[in-house]
Length: 282
Ligand code: C2E
Ligand code: MG
Ligand code: MG
Ligand code: MG
Image (cartoon, rainbow, N blue to C red; front, side, top):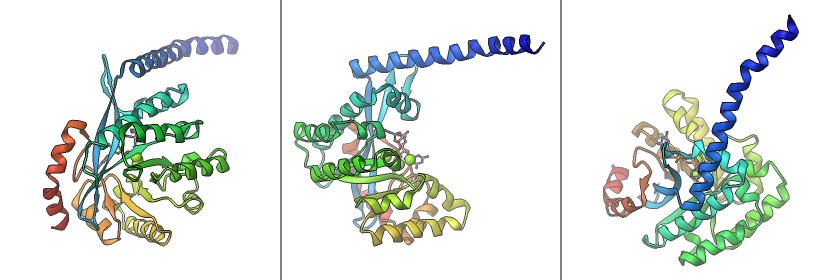
């Protein structure tokens, strides 16, 4: 009977839902413990300027060293951190640690830090950035904040006010994952970003479609007209690199040059700079 079937269907799914909820609760408990006990680490991936033919900075990328699961990548916990509000203390730690590390690098090397939408929208983000800068002594123009188009989904006026107050600190603002959002072009018009990071899905397209070139050209042309720099992320092979160079993309990031590395391997990459310069000039 239908009634009976409905009921048994319900019972059939319930344990699976319970299991999912249980795992999520456990993950939240573990995440809380990691915040308290310092279970995170930053990796750093080099950013290269084609115009300057040198390594100009690193993007800080968080890793979670889970006691039993080992290293957990951000795609697996940033969403949960956002939902639970834990992104606020995590994001504070990232800013402090990234600024501290960068303060040990040469003056012409900067650090880029991802700021998630909830962290951006929280009252106090400007204060958090300011205190990370003063605690580390890092010059504000050596810090670049990476935000995504999704910060515009809620209260646009408040978003713009926050962007301007951050900019007034002297930090740089980059628009990350450009092109993946709902209405990318209108956001570009609304704030003078320092840099536009072309999403890696567009770089991937370069190998497979000829339209890919046209999209890159459109973005670099538009960014140039608006006085913004471009950076292509996810550059994995020489063919992609050559198209990006030809289409006037100014900065690149990707496995072709380096994967993200631990903080103590940064010095080595900086010493090795000449090797990358040769590769860029070749
Ligand atoms: P994102 O900001 O767009 O960072 C770039 C991602 O692309 C990184 O993944 C990086 O390791 C990866 N990547 C770099 N080069 C290549 C390449 O050549 N090929 C491929 N396939 N991938 C490449 P990761 O470290 O797993 O981070 C994923 C996302 O998690 C980031 O995307 C960012 O949105 C978020 N995230 C990372 N660290 C933080 C953080 O400290 N705070 C916040 N709020 N979000 C973070
Ligand atoms: Mg980023
Ligand atoms: Mg990105
Ligand atoms: Mg991305």
